[in-house]
Length: 112
Length: 117
Image (cartoon, rainbow over all chains, first blue to last red):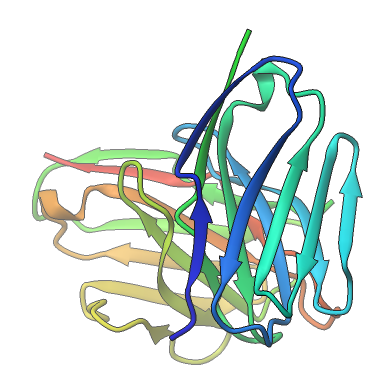
């Protein structure tokens, strides 16, 4: 069974710290992996998309890595800000036409 | 960038009412769109895959007669919750990616919060 797991479920850190969110998946034959941000009561905003042939993607203070052999991805957030507070979701796709499988998310809180 | 528009953003209605939610890809075409449901403090659960010009594919446990999906064009999919009851109250979100392009990200609508009284 293809599953996506995110640990921790919740994380609270002081402003300015660098942090890492973790995502693991059971089947390593992925097509791509995507990190999303969700604010309370809102839809999802795509942050980074990593294709199966890539090892990492960067956008501003965000860096996402992918290690298919170990079934893991990390989202690194540098110099965290209160505005980064949100739920971060990891999602895996196994083929171009397949559904996306979501992790349960990590609820991040940045303390001013 | 690609935008998915979802309407309405919020619906409050009486039990027994049927509610239609629209999902539009504004600047790209999508032969496939996805409908999700999200309960408070939980992740997204895929309900069904909407296919343009053909029947939707429903996930196990999702009643197709309860949640009617129509994907009549390459830019519009609709989800109708028929005879809605309080247990149908939830946050419904759709997503799409551009057809024909390799390895495109999924773009999500802003969601519809459905409250059945």
